[in-house]
Length: 175
Image 1 (cartoon, rainbow, N blue to C red):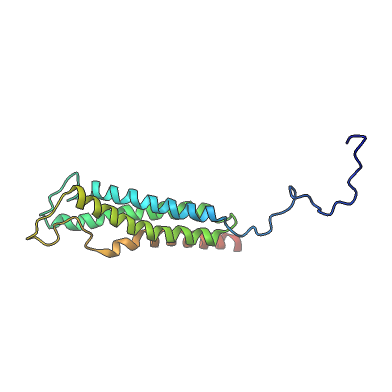
Image 2 (image 1 turned 180 degrees about the vertical axis):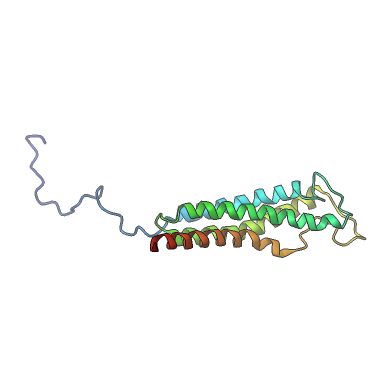
């Protein structure tokens, strides 16, 4: 303190804002919610491209006219969505102790729903633009998802992983 300054004895704000505790530590900032939504939607676009490349009757291998490969095409998307659901659920489960867990869970599961729909759109859109194209006289030979239940696997798996993690955490606290 300089000799010419008077001491501040009557400060009206104590503690200073630097040391003040955050008012609401249970909320997630909007940027965090947008990050979870955006990252899962982006993962959906990547999943759709991977489905188009890796599925039988897709871009790399398989014959669209072989009916046995149509089931494998749907199962490929289901398997990719299962892996994505486990990954998203595990990442959210590792952050359950941080503030704003319910909001983070809703954003991750909601983003998984949007990502699953985007995976379908990207995969079918790439097939429509770049091929392979099925024949008109053979229904089901086009690169389309026949079993729409596969779209529910990603958000359901993420929700189940988070639910089981919470139950295990509650069981550990009781013992």
